[in-house]
Length: 247
Image 1 (spheres, rainbow, N blue to C red):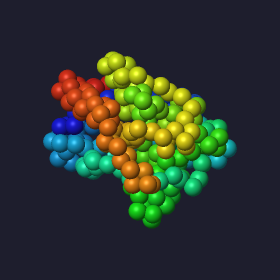
Image 2: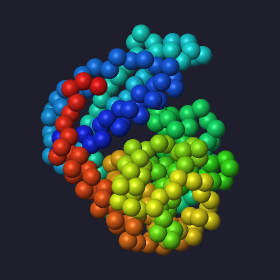
Image 3: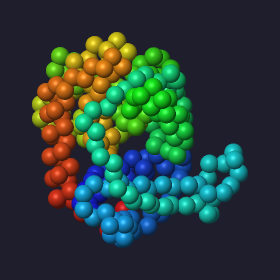
Image 4: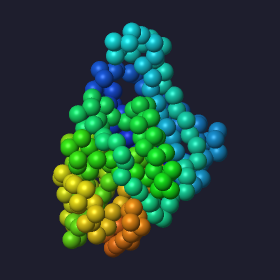
């Protein structure tokens, strides 16, 4: 936001945890300086932008997870898309495997998400919701899922196989800080249909209300409050934050 990465420490902490699960040890370069130069070169120091940091293991044996000597680390930056006021969603016809070794990792194996998202768009929906193999609510293709019922925020626990989203983490902290009841628990499809409010969270969008397959969209007070808290949090983060010189 305005040239300053928001919650960069949180994103990098998740990256390091993911690399640890693969037994990868990489000496990261001076990401702060590189990001600052990239933002400036791409003329993205005003308004909203998106930075993507990616790592490839390089060459090596297929049955060996070790990093190759030619492993790659690269960063891209581009304009962030506009935030929609509402997302229409349907249910994905394929389950998310919560027992997969990739569960909870943000990795380049993204074809499953894109195929499910394309399926939704062919049905004229903007997003899709995954159930896991147990039939429990998991996540959206491009974000985490929150429900509101009787004044309580509810989100699938990490055992559902959902990504530990940075925005999800921040929303949970904001709810706790501002006295909003919130639960991480097992959620079913009936909970989705019975919810008073539904919203999806992601780093580039924040919390966005959902319109389900029946065309219902409840722009309730809790979704609106969470959105205000999020907007204020990223504003303060961008004003107080700065690019780290060494991560």
